[in-house]
Amino acid sequence: MKALKERRKNQGVVSAGDVFQELAKELGVKTPATEANAENGEVTSEEAEERPRKKRRYIGKSARINAELMKEALRELKKAYARSYQPEVVDSIEGAVLLLKVIIAENEDVFPGVIKGKE
Image (tube, rainbow, N blue to C red; front, side, top):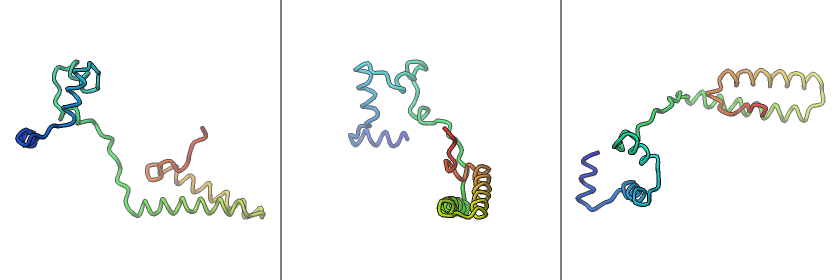
């Protein structure tokens, strides 16, 4: 990082972030970085960039394929439910949809936002 800053100085390259910070100081505009500098003294840009990240669970290719297949199955069941007038078929479709929704609810991290709550 230091080598990059030295190379920029030698080449006459100016960081847009540095220019913005200087303009903000001159105009008296408070930015998150200037507020942090005022509270804690001087905070380096490296410390400001490091934020705790939420660890994401890796979802494998087969799990993604299964998720898409289950979504497609729900769509097809919805179409069949709309077209069918036989009570036995409608009951079977409702049961299948219920089972798929339970599977999806148990694996919400693989199926983000598939089942939307009643808001």
